[in-house]
Image 1: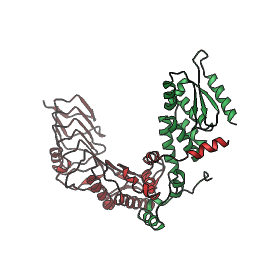
Image 2: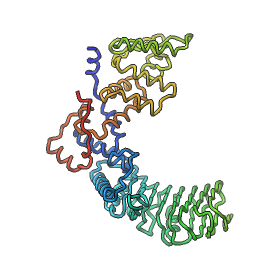
Image 3: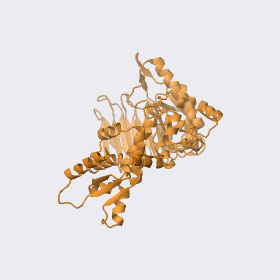
Image 4: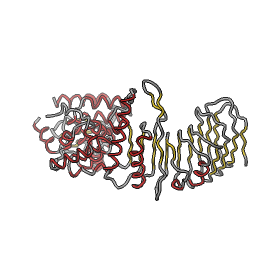
Length: 291
Length: 176
């Protein structure tokens, strides 16, 4: 037994590179805490470049645990989450950020935190931004509609190639800041008159485009020579808008609607390369392919 | 106790051995206990395998001075499961349930010395999960990190990032 003790005392500390590797696996909250260990570890948390803000990462909730359903508790948690997120971004010591992701029911009231996150993320070179803010929230009394955050227009250069927004509004009608995008996924994002054509016109590298339960105030016109994959889910929304797709390199198109009858809109597809079409809908009234 | 483990390991390796197969490998722990394992298990341990390769397989007794007879059976058990393709979440949960935080760290060092990638990756996650929600003082002790902040510096830092220092679990049973 003496020998065992001796072996132990010789090498019971883990090397720094391993400690650093272990820290790369802890939640954001625990990661930030490592800054208080010693001067050597003070800035270590700046090495985390993929920032994923969710319940588990910010509060160490077990991922299975649900959010509270009592409204005051929920509101308190929301504010706490936003304040922590804001504090994180203000103190973040890293020079580079690769991706930011928020998966939590924040709303327009937390614009200060979300704006700070988006601007700092873009400034530090983020390629991916995902803001997954739920559309509704179930409380003990009723389903609460989450008032959407207004996604800001980004001035100055950015490296964004992937943008995924859920329950956000887009603040601007000017889309030149999306010019590096390869993938755009919009869920519950209302699109104003003409904003879709302008968006397509400015997204000169767009390859994957998904529109999920978005509300349109005009006919849907998608014109893009770079687009490869397009998905449109109407969800529970009732559409009467016509759909026009002109995409010379489009390979796949998925279209689905929950409504199985009374689809009033016309669908025109001008995509000679199309090799896969999934059309889930009740009746097809006016589907045409132009070649 | 150690000899008991050793004889258990012998019987285990015999029962799983194809009688006609080539010689087993003897791993000798730092406290001189011999563990006989199948050559396939040695393959999981890069350090052991390169030792065998370097001597063209002539030497089949390998001293592992950095590893105790307490840790080696765990390492062997994990490698056996890994070869059998039987590493499941249930097995892993059961595997670490028996180990306290200090033992996990020792096992990690053993896996690091033997260079067993899968075990290293698994144990890093175990340690990451176990230090979650622990106090800064606990994490310092666990990794042997010396606090070189002045009390003022530390207080300021904790105040600036106050939200991360809340909801800390009490330091637990592993205290010596």
